[in-house]
Amino acid sequence: MTGVVWAVIKREYLQRVRTKWFVIATVAGPVLLMALMLIPYATSSRGADRERTLAVMDETGVLFDGVAPRLEEAGFTVERAGTGPEERVRLEEALTEGRMGGYLVLDQGTLARGEIRFFAREAPSPLRSVSLRQAVIQSALEVRLGGSSADVDALLSGGSLEVDILTGEGIRADDPEFVAAYVGAFLLYMVVLFYAVAVMRSVLEEKTSRIVEVVISSMRPFELMLGKILGVGAVGLTQMAVWVAAAVLILSLIHISEPTRPY
Image 1 (cartoon, helix red, strand yellow):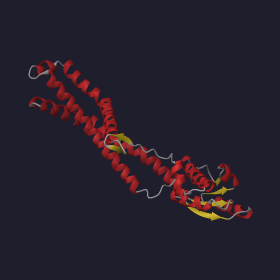
Image 2: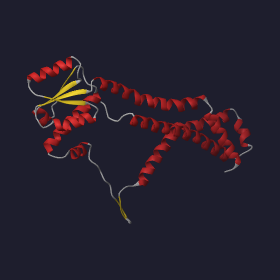
Image 3: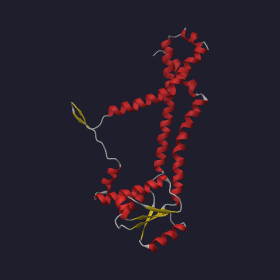
Image 4: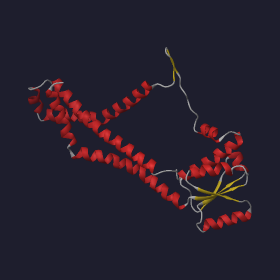
């Protein structure tokens, strides 16, 4: 690569990374990602803090031992309630006075058809509803199927597909070449989608201002296009590297600050 091409690459790169558009877009991407990820997380966390305590009235006598650990893993504080009309009156009073977030009633319909009754002062959020249903249904399936908790969780998660690729050297458990090709194709698509127009505009700017006639007199058209493509491409890769690093940092901070999964 000649010095002329390096000069074009340096000009195209520095000219764009110093613009306000590049700085704003590079900063706005992580900020928008942080807002999209942290705002729902903070909202759901505040809702869970207000109504995290649950009571479970298990009329079946076999579901509480499976439901309670799953609810606690989801971030709830679970207490075992008795059965009968008097116990239900006590739970309703505690719920009305705000001493608990709600209580579950598990009966034979829960064990047979997955029917669950949840009493609360207000409708639960979609995330909370999913966590309650998942905990109860997994426990009911565990009782009905007579299997272990790990087996039921594996079935409900969709199982797993283990692919063995037969080659001349034997069985290979994975295909790293496919993963690398998939990731490379995705990155190539993103770069072309966002920055191919920037290359075109870079060429059009000099053509419309007739600077290209002066530039071509001192270098070949191939060198000019190569320098522009590499320079603008380096700008795109720099911006994407900043976005990826910011995403990894945000995810790591969320993981550190979330020891449990409060729904």
